[in-house]
Length: 90
Picture 1 (spheres, rainbow, N blue to C red):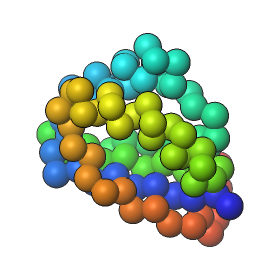
Picture 2 (cartoon, rainbow, N blue to C red):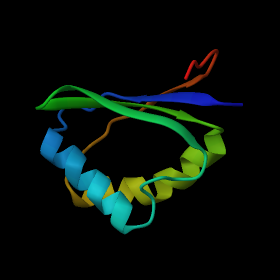
Picture 3 (cartoon, helix red, strand yellow):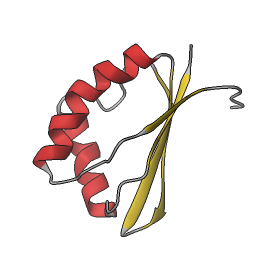
Picture 4 (cartoon, helix red, strand yellow):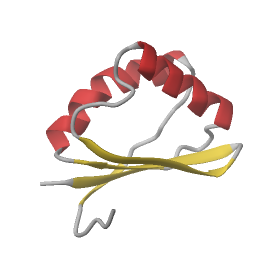
């Protein structure tokens, strides 16, 4: 079942987001299997992230790479909201 994942960290800057994306690319996880959609939005000093994943398992596998990268960069993503996806229009 597809899921929606919403991250609203207390503080994630555009610079930290860009560093995270570069590190994911370097780790070979910039376009992970199972991710259907990714977006980042908000003010430059408080970005949020919304993803759609094919399954909770695909998201969990990605998290094994994402978590250590964010910790290394000093970003606390907080606890994501994970919800079943009802509809997606591309």
